[in-house]
Image 1 (cartoon, helix red, strand yellow):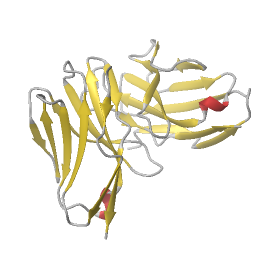
Image 2: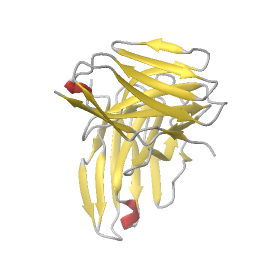
Image 3: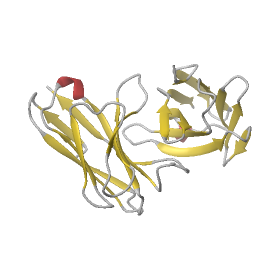
Length: 114
Length: 110
């Protein structure tokens, strides 16, 4: 039972480089999310996909794009990385958007932009 | 404004004692609350939830209490074990919106 799988686990980028964070879930969940976690702050929502074929901005979408490739996969792209995007990124899923039962989170991607 | 906060950023308890982690929320319209546990290097894990029409819910060694009058949520862990050492988050849900607290780090002393 893999749950939510994120890759890579660690990444170092130079300012201006691009990269895509991958996320896949095997629980047949409809809704998927990308969060970032910074020291001393609660998780902040970057983008979410309520269902396959839809994506919407969250609280901090600037500098990011997403793709809901199919029901299982939801990727996050940084087009031109900036030091302010240094963070730990978590992908999460839930059965539906109402999140009854909460989220299932991946193990995170620790990204450093130098 | 809307916020979910924690009274203490760190909590240190003796193994075998009970732990109480507190959380304040500001939105009276919040109707669903969740506690998560995050171990070092891992993603948050669901522990227990409670709806606003309840004031107490028990799980295995954990109890969540909700006081809507003062907008306060607490997580009680009975007989705290070394494996309980982690950061604990409170999350407040208002419709489709979730706000996470910054977290409390629980240290368990042997």
